Length: 337
Image (cartoon, rainbow, N blue to C red; front, side, top):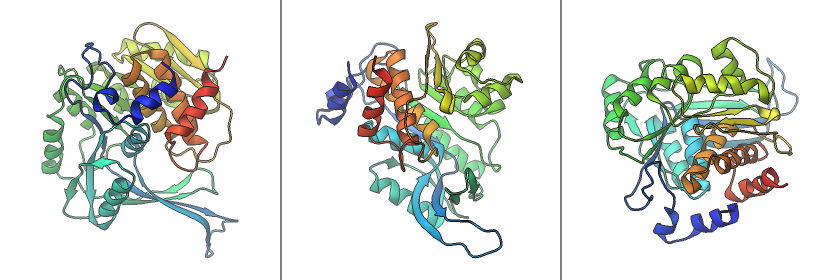
C-alpha cells in the first residue's frame, strides 16, 4: 500500500476504513475502539523567538515569535493527529498556562485529558531560534502522589491492542521510576508501549518489553560507554537493547540518517533525506509518531521505518510539526529508487 492510499484511508469519513489496520494479535482495529494515548508529565507553552544580533546585558527585541504547546508526548499527539490518527494527550496541567495549552491543543484538533494541579503553573519554555539550541525552560508545578494515582487510574483503562507513548523526562516531584511503575502496572495486558527516554530511564524499562524504543546515536552510545558515529556503528548496540528486552529499536542520527533493528531480525537503514533544517524541535517525536502511524496502518517494519524517517525529517524541514502533505513529500524522496 502506498502513502497516497494511506492518505485516502485516513481522510475517509468511514470509521471502519480509518481503523483498517491490524494489531499484533491479528485482530482488526475498529472491531473494538482502540485507545491511543500519549503521556506528557510536564507539558509546556513553548515561546519560540528569533532575535537578531542577540547581546547579553542589553534589551533585545524579537524579529519573529511563535507560541505552541510543547512536550514530547504532546508533539507525538500533534503529528499523529496531523496524520489523521485520533489520540488522547494525557498528563498534568496547572494555572493559566495550562489552560492555554489545552486551548491551543483544541484549536489544533488534538484531544486532551490532562489532570489539573490546583497549585502552581505549567511551564513556559523560551526557545531562542537564532542562538542554536539555547533554551530557558520553566519548572512546572509540583505533582502530588494523589495526582499521580489519578493518572494511573486513567491508564488502567488501557487494554490489549491499545497504544501508549511514554516520552521525555520525569519532573523532580514525581518518582524517578515512574515509567517502570506504569509499565509494571500494564504488564501482560497486550498494550503496545513506546518509550522515548534516555539512559537509566530507558534501560530500566526494557525488562517490560516495550514495543518500540527510540534513542539517538549519542544516547545509545552513552548507555554502553562508546562513541557511535555511523549507521553501521549503531547496529550491534541496537541489538544489545533487544537482548535486554526491547522489541524494536529505532535509532535517529540527525544528518547521518536512521537505523531500525526490528524484532523479526531485519535491520533497515537510510541516509537522511535532503532538505534544509528549519526547526529541529520535535523531529525525534515526529519520527516516533510516523513510525507508529505506519505500523498501525500496515504492520510492516520497513514501511513503518520509512514513515518514521519521513515524519521526522518533514518536521525538521518545517517551521512547525509536520503535516500529512509534508510527510508525503519526504516519503516520496525516501522511497524513490
